[in-house]
Amino acid sequence: MIGSVISNFSFGQEDLPKDFSVIKVGKRVVVSWTHNFPSVKMISVQRSYDSSRYFQSIGAPPDPNLKDNGVSDPNPPNDSMYYRVYVLLDGARYVMTKAKRPMVDTSGVAGSYNDVNPNNNPPSQTADFLPAGFVQSKYIFMTPDRYVRVELPMDSRKYDIKFFNENYQPLFELKDVREKRFKLDRSYFYKAGYINFELYANGKILEKYKLFLPKEF
Image (cartoon, rainbow, N blue to C red):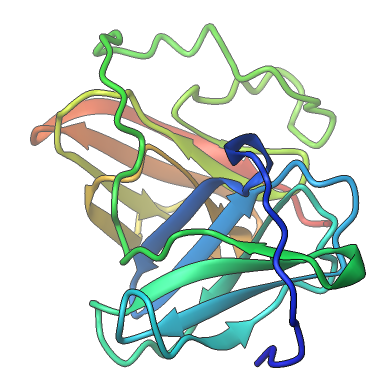
């Protein structure tokens, strides 16, 4: 827990961690983010029963300067805990996000998207870790930093995601996913290879496809 920081520093909203996600995966809670700071001394995830007080650090990434990162809370006391991201900068300056509970949707954006993904518009990214000819989904895909990225349509529909191994045996599922942009650590999928998934919107199948997890980080 950080107790020695004595001064705060004011930053614009664009400097705070972006895509701050808190999502429950099985019994664990995964907190992930993207930040734009040029240099960071430390980032930690803090947890509390209260939305404004009594926060304690539960984990920190090994390299805080990675723009896309996250921390897993393997044993949350309950599903109603509050989480926030604390960023320590040079000169004892720090910033922190607002606290929120798992599965809170902070996008506030509505829009219209196609109901079917023809898999002909893959995400713009370096894909040298993918098998030749494999085209990724635009909704659920592996990023070059080896995280599984989920990007859902920014609308009011209720989304559910089911993940299966290569033999279509169930791995886990995410119900009533309200966060539109978040990441999942590859450790949740147990091993490399193809991972099948089913994405539902309001109970109807939106996409049935797969993603590929490479063996090496």
